[in-house]
Length: 210
Image (cartoon, rainbow, N blue to C red; front, side, top):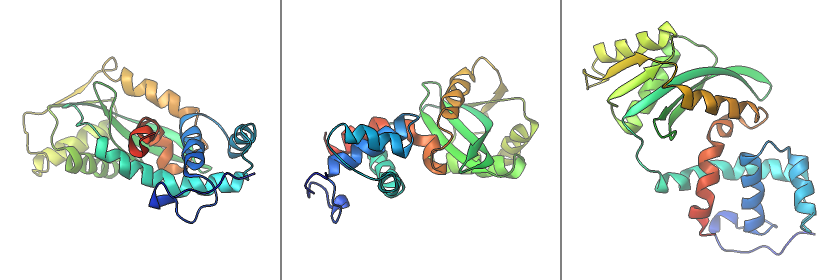
C-alpha cells in the first residue's frame, strides 16, 4: 500500500506517495542497473506497492529537477579536461556520446549526437566552454574531427586562451574510458540521465537534506 503523502517539498505536491519513496526509487534507478519492475519489487519488500509505469513517470519527471538542484552544490571543474566519444544505445537507438571530465573525474559536460563529425564536436565544445570557460589543456583521442573542431574554435576566437594545450594521450584518458564502461551497464536509462546518473546520485542527499 502507498505511504501517506507529505508536503516536505512543493515539488511533490499532488503525488500520492511520500516524497522520500519517490526520491529513493529515482536514486535506485539512476544509480544501479535495475529495471522499473525490479525497483517495484524492492519497494514491495518495504511494504510499498507501486506499478512500474509509475516509477518510470517519477524518473522522467524528477530526474531533471534533481539535476537542477544538484547544480547548486556543483564544484568548479578543473582546468585539465579529458574528452572522448563513445557509441551507445539510447531508447533503442544507437547514438554518439561526447563527454568530458576533469583530471579528478568530475563531469565537465556531455552531448548526444546522431553524427560523429566536426560540427557535433564543435557543438559539444561550445556548450562546455560557455559553462566553464577555457581550460588550460584538453586531452583528446586520436579522432581527427575533434582536433579540427578545437582548432577551428581557436581560429574563430571562441577559445580565448590561445596557449591552451591540445594533446592525445591514451593514459590520460583512462579516467573517462573507465566511465564509459560503467555507462554500458545502464543502456536502458533515459537519454539524458544515462550520462549524469552519477552526478544526480551523489547530490540527492544534499538537495533534500536527507
